Length: 367
Image (cartoon, rainbow, N blue to C red):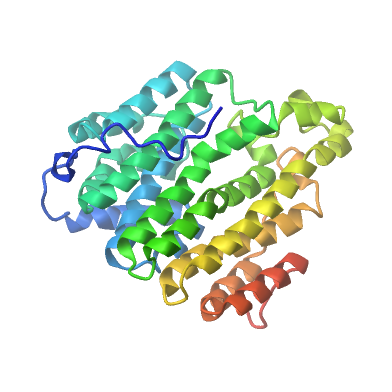
């Protein structure tokens, strides 16, 4: 299926002042505060990264991320019927055109099953759309475009696999990753271009060439480390069935101890894909002008964590065991959080740090 990153949403040619928004007035401080307070509970890593983004850009990325998480929460709800998920995704996307409908959607989502933080986020859908509506209209256009693209893709896969997502081929895997992560790479690049004077038109064009890989690299690492979690708690298996069958296994035996070697071998192509996409993601980062320190810092932290996680993934089979998890240590996380911002202004230093993390655990003395 051809990818659709160049397709404009239906409202792309409408005048800016015709775009749907809530009442145009300054956002109440308590709404933005609620969003910022909730963010660490749905993603501690992202909460650290978004804090370095200044002003309007930080608010834009905060709103965009929370909207993506709401869509993801709808898609992942394992106990709910696929047709209900698809209809709810439609309602979610309709909120861009009819913001008043977000109130009813928030009320309904608050009753869905799930963990506390994500249920609270979904129950605050109207607040997140209020934050979105407070953004500059050009920013709204970017977020609307890419979150809608993500939502349409999620809807497609929910209906394609009504009994739980079961990816069949590597091409289907790549398509899925485009929708749920490649779109995020494009959206962030559009926001950098709009809000940072350092990201000129020529820089923007270069970033666009690697935007998809930047988003998808992080997604592939997450899929690899969460094989057991996704299968057991979300009834989703993203490792392609064809790859598993080629090594004598399948989705039904993805966590079988007897098939551990075969399952591990089947991950090889995805591991290679992750390494390649991460290298492209580093090129993306190094294309961002060095004076755009906040954007580079925002990008470098998740990339370093992904490299460290992928390094550990190649040395274990824990992700293929019931209840198995793969996590880098808190000391390594803290060390990278401390050192990366100091080095991010130098391309050579970033390269050095990446290569060092790929080799072995990185821990600063005293952390």
